[in-house]
Image (cartoon, rainbow, N blue to C red; front, side, top):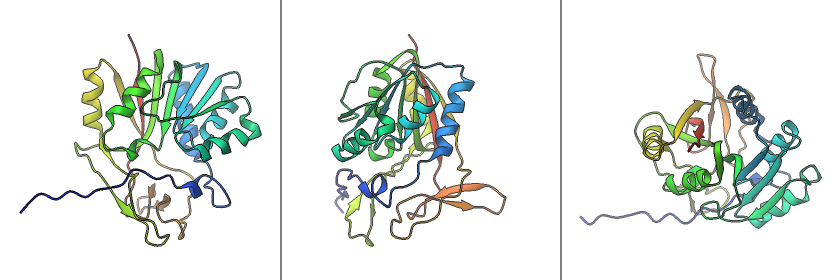
Length: 241
């Protein structure tokens, strides 16, 4: 029997997740977890680049905590960038429309990319570009779904409720694969487990969105309509000589 492949279309942004009356509240738990990590690492960054910034929620949070820092955001969707530019609280930030796999914005003390790695079938191109835009001694922080076991998963889903065809966005990579990639390039990588503390309700009209699930052991985990309990991870890459 001939081998058959499933053709998944390119990632399509879900604008209702970021704009309008259905906009999700910023995930302040992960933002706080991230800034606590910066503080525990004794970092005093003066410049931040957020790749896949959407409407700028993370940059807004960083601007409140690092008031004199340079803030730059990149997103491939012009609607997201236009919305970010309209936000008065982000008037000091700079935003650009561009492809996170290719665009070069300069060198920054901290480069972030939250919730974007799972869009791609390979993790290397995005991570390579993030590292390339980080100063020596700086850090890259990526919020992603990463599996502790040495397994990579590609996922396609179809939102029949909203009349949307097959989409991607929830690919899951193994930590072991990323560790091998990092060490082969002389980079040090940490994987920090993250569990949501706040309650996120399930939104029946948007089943792809994450919601929280309280387990019998008293812990809270994040789940979505794909029946995935999400292995949320904050990845930290040290960029050195």
